Image 1 (cartoon, rainbow, N blue to C red):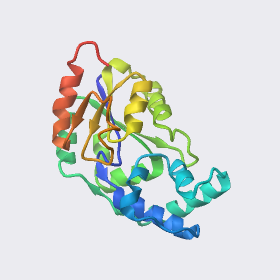
Image 2: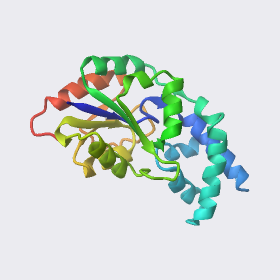
Image 3: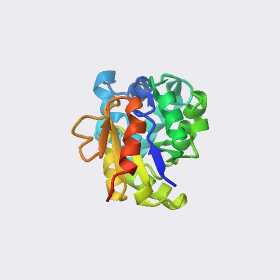
Length: 220
């Protein structure tokens, strides 16, 4: 069956305010100056530990773990609510379901948080499965995560496509032999989305792009 893998942050929900506020909180707790929220958009999508490694200029596991812990202490109670479903996403998901595609959430965000978010915004009903990273960072790399989903769900590359807004979605898809439809309304730059099979300027574009993708001979 044809299957669509959806990213979460920057694709289904505008999670930037909560993520950046939690990063600022963690930086303050670590005794560092908190960068302006607008300068932290590059942190939306990648694994937290990688972002903090750059922000703190360290690869010390203990320090990175402490920063992630400070982040999560705020995100679990407040940060996940500083979020909003993009206009048109619910209608888009309904249309994709009507196209009889299977849908899985595939996000580098820890699965417990991703589950909490899609349940809070009543999006869980659209997905056949939810996949995210472990709290210990397992499957935090998008290539590893997509590969895991393909294996677990017994999906073929020919009948699977990823939809996401960051380079991690494009690169991870390519490494796993599947196509990627990029979304330009999220947090990724035009440069990050190079290599996508198509670009959605708004959620409403996605159903048509999916239909065109699966009808294309010789893909991915």
